[in-house]
Length: 305
Image (cartoon, rainbow, N blue to C red; front, side):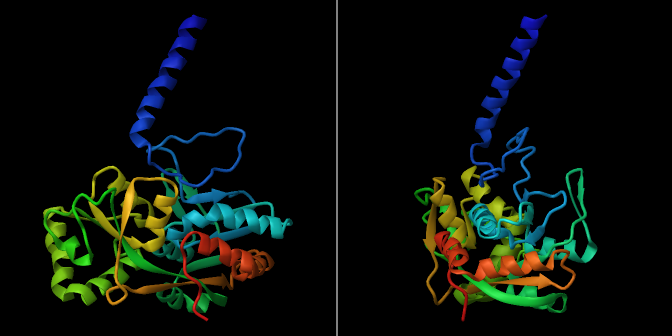
């Protein structure tokens, strides 16, 4: 009986390993924290946008979702500079989802209900302005521009934003309903091809199934391209930069300044922050030379002074 049990376990583990190869690009792309039991199943149970200690945290930060790549370095170094903070919890969901979480008080992911209040919320300027009365302090800490992510070697020969309107190019597009970048991309399309290009990509191609609207842009567009479900997707420059940094087979098509836009990211300390001192300390670190170097390392541009 014991031999059969051991054989069965070995077979299941082997089958799981083979199955995992189908998910070789799946998140989490960050380094998971140390734990007594590590249970991550690619494509099923990975929860890549919730980080750290959710029980009795000393600091809670809601980051703009496309900044998931800075979390490891940012939180680790913050704890080095401020060792009194051992337990930090962070989320990197789309800013619109995070804003709804703040307003409604909770979030459900899968079967898990999260009822937690943030100390700091970061997002683009428009989203911050919408919640301006909720903050005691706001600061601009980084910037970004757009780029186009394509499959390695760019087999469809995408050369610019206008090519995303081609019928043979499967486009992954951030949903403007909760992703600020979606609205900024539309601004860039207007510069490039006017309302006709927007109509083609956001109406005609959606109807035909060749434009896909994402549910969680900063994870979904790279995955769709990596798994050959899309040929190209307009993203933040840092998205392509990071995927190339970790060795994933994607390429970047740059967008000229005349057609591009610039985003500015702002952090606000909430008036309702449960840990106001920790929030102030984190804001100080975020704006420090070390905090700014971390953002620069991942391709972000400096804040506008």
